[in-house]
Length: 610
Ligand code: M6R
Image (tube, rainbow, N blue to C red; front, side):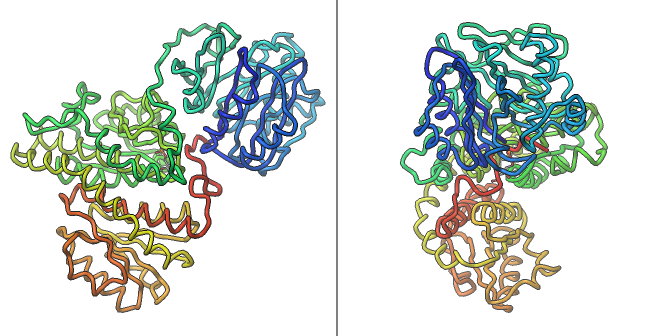
């Protein structure tokens, strides 16, 4: 949430900052702003998208080679020009941008106000810049003022700051919200993620919680905020290409990422199928695999789409490997005093690896003695670094706020884990071979399903104006129903609910009339006949049925207004295929409704505040 970028070097800062903000806009798009130091500090900021700031900077350019930029997802204070970042001290000598929440801002503000300080905005961030100024007036040293102020702060932050008092330095800090320093040739680009850095350099240092850096044109120092001790940081190489974070001819990132799924799931499998031993190889779990096999209980924690992947994971791991699994929203797990023992293994699933609820739940599990594992997409993200072991999903950068390829890659990793554990426990080599063959065939089936997108587009036209949708599925495809509903509501603003199909009778059936579209996920698996009965129940109440069914199933045609056919695979892999038409349906409905698919209102890609 909120994108942060900063620059110090020999080039004009504003265009680098603006470009960085365009890459970071998926993190929040309520307002945008920059602050650049020349002989004095110039701040330009505006409510709305980065394009608005771009126009402002074209008509009134700012000059300077040190600066910071921010794109905001509002927490404290409405998305107005005044509340936009950067925030400054009273006489415009210090400018600061912030991602996160300063939880004790009210107490700090009260104390500062009592000391005679005044405030211009409603934000928590402004309190910090005013506090830094107060310390600067006391110490006359900007690095010390920055550090002392941060020591007073309770909450999460990624921060960048510039000041006319120390014009050749850029100050950054991290506690809970990501911050990376890109190392260029006599220049540094800092950002809340590498997408704003990669076009300038691939050499990156990631700050850890409780660390700050003071950056000059040709050197930087990293240290602990609490006691000022220097920390040596490893320089890492960013692995993705610029092309991966551009739209590549598609109208939206979401559509591009939907169509990248064959490759994404190939990448999630690459090097992991052991054909000789009819099993799976997961290098990241090598040291913990025996403990996993013998675990009495696995607990999966995640949010949003990743939570839905976790639910499929429960069915997969229990069904194939026979290990009990619980799945919980990370935000609930953390605050309900969960009973965790040293025997438990907690698995965090996250695309970004930065979701604060998941991260906090993970820390809670760890504090209570559990071993922690991660299934994460973003390499070197906080969750990836803070777990004992894990598996990368290798979906590549996902920019669209609506998660698509990250979901199917997570499902693939979970399937691989389940097969690995099952082969160690109770699955025969011949079953293993059958599954490996099905896995091998899956990317082509995904490709084929996506090639039929025109049919889904056509169907979507009939539903662009409806106010509600219901999604129903059973077994492995119940979480797919939840995911279909989430996709539709987040990008089209149509109210949608997902339910286990049989649960409909216990309440949601009251909603069904001739205006209610009901999407049934109905592959020919063990519960197919039951799902058909549920379809009949909806038809009896004049509901409009859209069925996702296996190719060749003509029996379902008379029961549905529309049938979307998908290829058959093994039941436990079917979510990877069945979710595809649901992603496409939500995309086309949202486009028909004129919605901003990649930047849906009120949302941000990575939720780094509680
Ligand atoms: O990065 P994470 O996987 O931890 O993110 C979790 C959710 O915030 C995310 O899946 C969210 O629900 C998406 N917008 C869904 O499309």
